Image 1 (cartoon, rainbow, N blue to C red):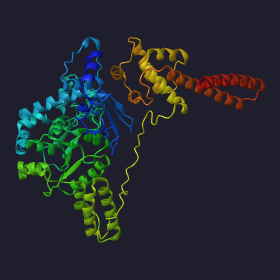
Image 2: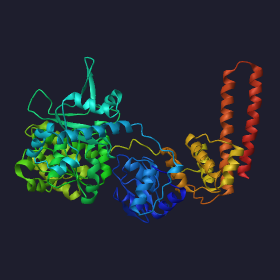
Image 3: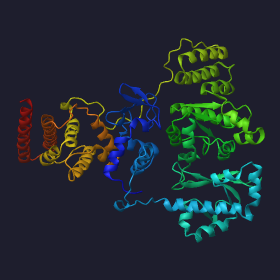
Image 4: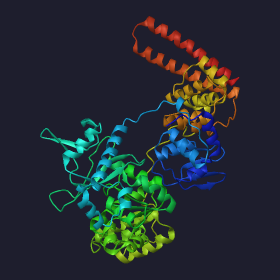
Length: 588
């Protein structure tokens, strides 16, 4: 990554419309002159994300996340700020000039691990093309996996143990790196490669970095696991990864859907059918991190798990979690009892293609699945079935759909829910509260609000910054203090604060969120206002004096020496006089 000038950052921000950029990722709904959306950064059900077209900023009023066009892309893509600037520049076709002489490259501490795995991938693909891999190539041909797919997925062959270890060491990777990547283990003081005589399919993170493998056995020895994956390492966290995500996400946005399957071979089955937007969670139980990645795609999901009993159970578990995360998804009505790979190989490409167009809603799926999980001749089971169905119907269906579904429940159970109140499935209150400025109460209500007011004036005026440093010097609120330090630093080189440049400097999210909250101008003071600034300063001074008075009161309670008590009482009286003078000035 190279240095990007402040002038370029400002020009890109001015030319890039935040609404256009954000609409690449999430669905926006116009509200007056601004927009609102479901927040992708927390478990949101009602639109709580506000986008200001005038100020070109966004703010979530539940989780507190906010920023400009760059910080949105940075957060949703999980990339660096400069990478986000480059991405936005590319979208608007801005001719970005990079100056490598001004930037000290930050080396990713995990890069040696990525390099090691990439080197191992090259070894595996070489082995597949060698005489050792001839039988594996025949196996792939039998599975109808052609050369294009082999190259696209970098499929390879892991030979017997010692050869791969020797190769990687010859390439300069020491044993510690091999351990850290999960490629070798020790047993009885002997070192051996984890993958031995297996078909190897690399796994990448969301950015395309190679982090591990899923490996299939090449014989029918039942004593050997059919599939094994890389064990947990510094770069391979199974619960954070989705297979093929880095390749499929652009196809998903283009085709306005993403197909979720169980395993890597199912993804490859869709590739064989020329469908490129399929992905797989590494295991059927999705984690919250994986759900966040799925939500980030901002396209409808088509869930295509296996058609057997286990696949339907996995679909049920996924559906419950997906409803909690507010995902837009439908479920393939798989009546074949087969997985996608079996459908392609046994029933053909057309059948697999058609299968993803035969979808039902989660509630429709439940009407087929849940009656087999309950004994509907048993009264208690009927109550449980009805309660579960009602909860999902209330959360996911329109009034028209509810009427139809409740009629079907009545036919199945005899329970009439037609007059049911829509209060069964209560959505929990968000756990994350706004980190700054929840409700802007009158200034008299506290020191923190006064500090926000002073900080807003510092953002608007170098004079305010100088006066605050001279009269008080620091903020009690640590986030205010940190933001003020950025301001002082900018004022050393310029006579005003450029909000775009300031936003690009800030690394901590809570500091950036405070800046966004202040930019929304809760005080309705648009430029430097001497009266507002002085009132805020006096409030801070008053609170500081009151803190000192309270501290002396505690000391007086805890000392026994009468002379010390007299001295403390005298100091307290001086502080009270100073506090009263401030109050008189405020009233005057």
